[in-house]
Length: 77
Image 1 (cartoon, helix red, strand yellow):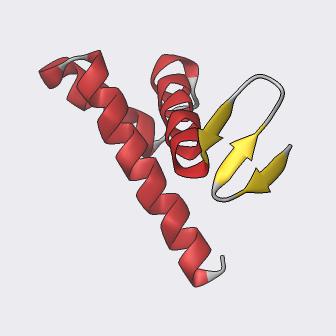
Image 2 (tube, rainbow, N blue to C red):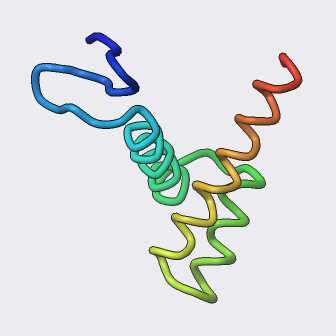
């Protein structure tokens, strides 16, 4: 793997780093909704899923996960 001009290059895929991060966060959200531990984030996602459907719940959990990770990064926790 190497970084060049904002792209992450591997043998299989060449994506902008932000797109790869978006995909990884969405995969994490799907895991949390499907079989993740019982936590506030999962309960939030299940409530959204009951009202709006699985796809919108996954996006909502992805956003909350990104906000929480950004908070940890900014505060150095």
